[in-house]
Length: 290
Ligand SMILES: N[C@@H](CCC(=O)N[C@@H](CS)C(=O)NCC(=O)O)C(=O)O
Image (cartoon, rainbow, N blue to C red; front, top):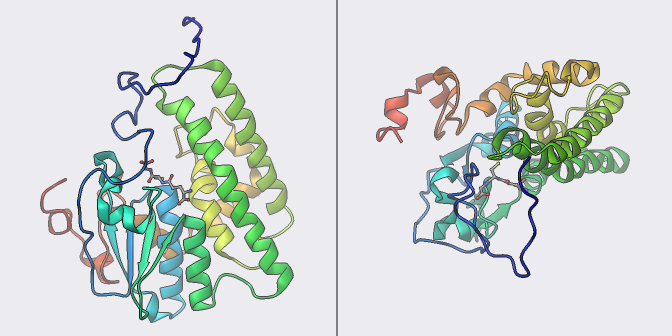
């Protein structure tokens, strides 16, 4: 057992704790360096990475394109958060919170910045009039599940995932606390998905697009290697929905964008055109091999 930690009177940051994110975590906000963001040919410029929070947005953009909304064509630029690119001045100008995803809409008289994945989903759904019902009850249900995701996932990622997979030491108390909460969340989803096909009801919405990259991937046992530990197979309705949503072609495409992990055939580090999915090659899109 490690010695009990006694907090000092005034906290000061440590840089030698060996945690996975020691190089990027810091107790202040704002830019660390000057860096102008690239701008491509489309009005929508996405600065992101293929993490669950990033994938929510690329799934929606690909769904909008699949629905025939040509105005949803976009450039997706990869922001390497492990290298601190989220602290460049250009990125901080789009998201003062220095986290992916961040969107610039350059289609109007003045550019519009949008940060926080939930806000980006609402912005795009309203702009194109899709995947966010207009009837008050269905809209309220959609926004409720969307906000549920925004409030719940930090317990899954920053709580459970951090202490189960990333922390330099295994702390039983922390893992127990967050495993309990994540299993409760899975049960919330499982009960809801036992009542309806999708989270907001019969219709597939931005709520499903927000929840799936976190809890669908978890239900497939692919998040933090924790499938067996959390007995994810027990959540049958979540599993049914996970497979149903995961089979959508737009979801498959959205998951590839800005992804740099796993099977190279499923990595599209940057996306500038629909044809990039067919013509991608690691060397062409990533000449520096970074
Ligand atoms: N609430 C934010 C969370 C975004 C977030 O945590 N992004 C992570 C990657 S998934 C990030 O950019 N981390 C970089 C950092 O913390 O410095 C959202 O949903 O947009």
